[in-house]
Length: 115
Length: 111
Image (cartoon, rainbow over all chains, first blue to last red; front, side, top):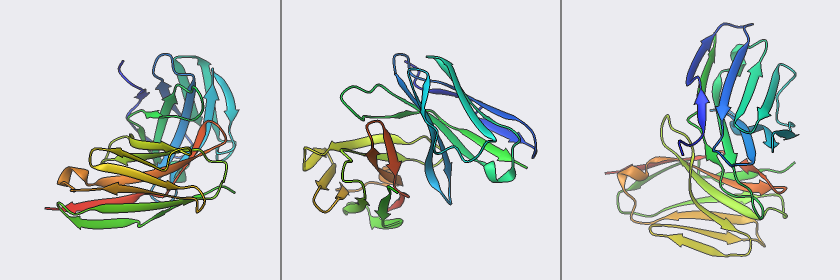
């Protein structure tokens, strides 16, 4: 398996533009997580899905952020409109949960820069 | 709310020495404690984990200990090598499926 795939790897955009980040989880995994990593705030969980259904979005910073998982092999995180403070590395991770929490496999991340 | 505290934030050791990183957690219901290593510009990767029914786990030069009463867990790396230089994150499970991560420890192994 190729592991978790994210695209794009780098994104540079201007304030006010819409940004869409994409993730393909490991085949067969039933949980998908979106994280944001910054120097100031570390690794923050934004939202996670189970079997394509959003379970907990309490980490989503504000209404400008939205996430979807239309099927088991694809998820998007959208920021509209983007702001400079959204600049960060966004990671997607997936997990096969049986018997409780277990390893989360991270994708390579998308480095977002909002000018 | 739930949180995980991690210390130290930076750690420098001589090659061959041991390194210890400590974490405390607040949720007494946490039952899974993974440690991730993140090299510069790379993704976090699991290096070892421990569940609450176990007090210690070893994997070659890496070990993790857990004290449930004190809500402490620690990562021990022996015989450190330059390739151990990275940022290490502890985490504790919250609820059944999600983690809260510590703030990270930047380990530098000096040759």
